[in-house]
Image 1 (tube, helix red, strand yellow):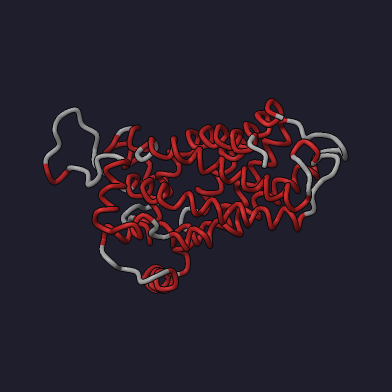
Image 2 (image 1 turned 180 degrees about the vertical axis):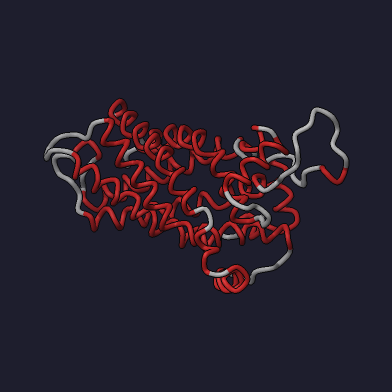
Length: 291
């Protein structure tokens, strides 16, 4: 097993998170809260009520843990590919793996990532949905946030909803990440191969473009199930509104129409391009140093 991919994934994940978290906050609120007229309205109201800090709610916990999740994602993918094709990362330019191997390794990576990500993502989504204003003084009781921070959030969920509560939305996360991670790595590999001469290593611009496209394509595919996942995660705060994935899909479609599953599609795809461009460039550069 190669450990370099885990280390490179950890650092590149942190870089991508810092860049993309403010947009992710807007995305989560649009998917789970009614009353916003669109992206701009959400941005303006968040800034007016909560200052710039409102866009970074829930980031401290993912900054420590999503880097680990990204590490698991890249590490699981690379080691699965090593098992399937018997080709180390440094040898994949001269002996490229098949797309079928990339697909299987990507699915495995998405499945493993979902297992690790579920509690982290739940805490992030709950904190991002708190719309309390930031104030230097003491807030009145009705304006106090439900969760004081990530540790308090996780402890409260565990106390009120039990261990299963920490994995609320887990199956939706699996359905979101398993196929999209396969598409993520296949798109990245395909664009790199298309823009690079045979036997050569892709340059920084190629890696940026390929990583950006991979992120945008995978998030376009992931958005419908991402909406379902976020709603199931918030369900614990509102009571048992949904009885499962299918009930959430049917109920959301009946109340808001099929377009509900496209909420934040444009935002997800636009955010994903720079975030994943930076993530892949950091990952590839770190691997060159480590390997």
